Amino acid sequence: MEQEMGRFDREGAERMDRIAKTAFAPVYPVIAEQILDRCGIRSGRCLDVGSGPGSLGIALAQASDLAVTLLDSSPDMLEIARGNIRTAGLSGRISLLAGDVHDIPLPPDSADLVVSRGSVFFWEDLARAFSEIYRVLAPGGKTYIGGGFGTAELRDAIAATMTKKNPDWKSFRDRNLGPDNRARIAGVLAGLGLPHRFISDDSGFWIVMEKGE
Ligand code: SAM
Image: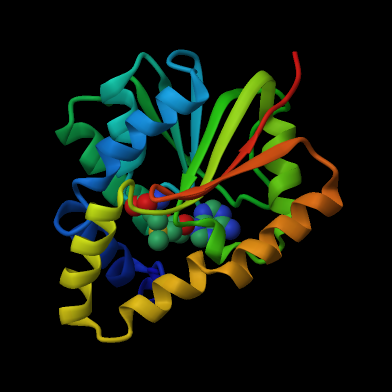
């Protein structure tokens, strides 16, 4: 999907920010509403893993009472996110955290909702990453981790725009969201034995993990 932005240095971060503010812009509020409806968590602490420029975390904060932490391993992404949070007037409710999903710099049970869009495809050790996410999930908490564009209409409109710039874009997208990758992720989660279910529909492919009370 976004492998053309696989390097998240300053240039890659600026490219992601531009796309998030143009072609992808309508997706974030739609996915934010889907997360809030499907998870039923509208307050407490939310962690956005691989937040990039922060568009999903910002949309979630705007649509709920959640206090959001944006976690990303790219300092350039976080720098751009800082500006976006300020512009959105949400500096009081959204904070930044530099770190890697494989070693999340948070104590156990510290997030009521863990979201992530378009980042799981870059994680090198899925078993470790999902174990870390489960560790920081608070009792009663849920995750919404995966990738997608919210609706079939948005997905197709974005594909039309992105393909004009990069003819290979659809094959990037389909490699990330296709059956092989879904099966690979499902295999890792089955091996971990952590409670989870998948949402696989026009909104995308999402992993909902739940930690019992
Ligand atoms: N979630 C944002 C969105 O949907 O607009 C950004 C998606 S961007 C394609 C992927 C993000 O994941 C990048 O910001 C990248 O730095 C981050 N990322 C990749 N591997 C990571 C890791 N191991 N730990 C934390 N963040 C990571």
